Length: 171
Ligand SMILES: [Mg+2]
Picture 1: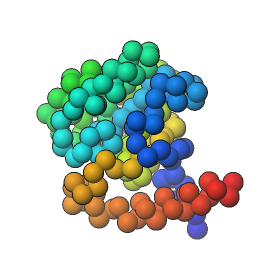
Picture 2: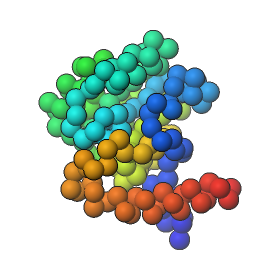
Picture 3: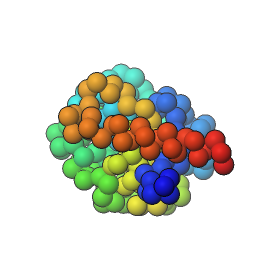
Picture 4: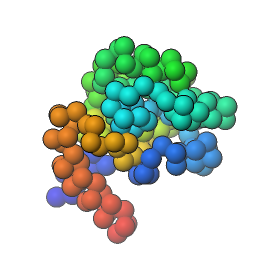
């Protein structure tokens, strides 16, 4: 039964991006990070705040490359990417691979040097698995601000997450 859900399993889970520090990334051999934006870095449709700008600056200063890949529309994604100083792919249609492949090309890195960070198993994580890139699941920044479509998927994601966590413990 649980094998059925393998497509949606992240490589790792952390509660939020603040745990993903340059040291954390270097320990995993990662030199680039592909971020989802909405509910991963900031709440749904919220602009890049000072904390987000500082966070990206800290990664860049450490020599970590960044890229944002979002299913949201260009004005939102472009404004965010410009505010934090990274490349972007909008309307990425995750779980499509196209945004992740564009990110790898844009950062001039290899798959194994990159991790994907996102809050949704059925888009961010599935897309990373399809692209054969490691993934880090984070808890949504503000689940109450999910779009209606996303809120419908959350119970299923929670179920799969629980199964994944149990497997982690047993392995
Ligand atoms: Mg998201």
